[in-house]
Length: 319
Image (cartoon, rainbow, N blue to C red):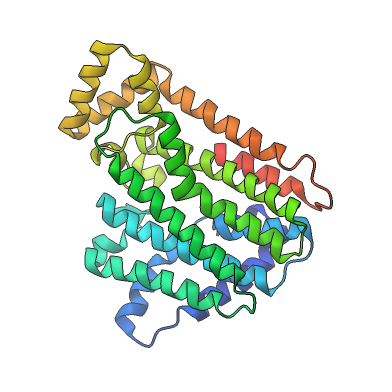
């Protein structure tokens, strides 16, 4: 896992998180075990568990609660990845075939459901059920974000405000919860928990903006996943929103015609327009602004022992 290479201070804790994760998912049905094992390569930087551990470390010592919360956050995240790949009809993830491509949509949906079920089963091992309630609330918020995004599919009048609301719900909310629960499990004051929650929210927004840029202009081999799915599914993201708002009526009509044809060559042409007009650069700047806001949440942070790791993590989102 990449996180181990970059954050040695929590490397040993990652191994314990992995043990809890694997132990929870033990199944005596071989065919199910094989599908669970197929998700192993999806665990790249383990960003959400990393946020839990670094937030806990910044506020005190990491304990068993942190490890459970970290494992739970990754289970919820993997469930959303599996379901997203079904919705996007994606064929590649982390350089390999997706669960739906290997096993079909029905099995993929049920496997995602099982990850969610295991996440709450693992939460129930903690005496304080506030963690389970917070994870449940966040999972509801993630689903709300996905549903709002589906509602606006094919809507080329989507505003930046609505877009930011969507990605805050579907991506940033879980990262914010990871930071909040990481601080809370270290018995930090509520003010510090809220500061870290805001940090995670801003990092999450920036992360999704950058991921949406990658979907438009990234290299599929380098990214290791199916790209271009947003436009193929008529999901407008920040660069496209900016372009359509500023390009003029005639150019806008032509661009919408390209998008509605949903052909890869037309979508590539649209992506080129985004690069040429500074729309991609605008989205990058907005991502940078959210990272700066995340860092500000750490400036007045009494009792924080290791904010430099959190600052470094925030910067890594933009790389």
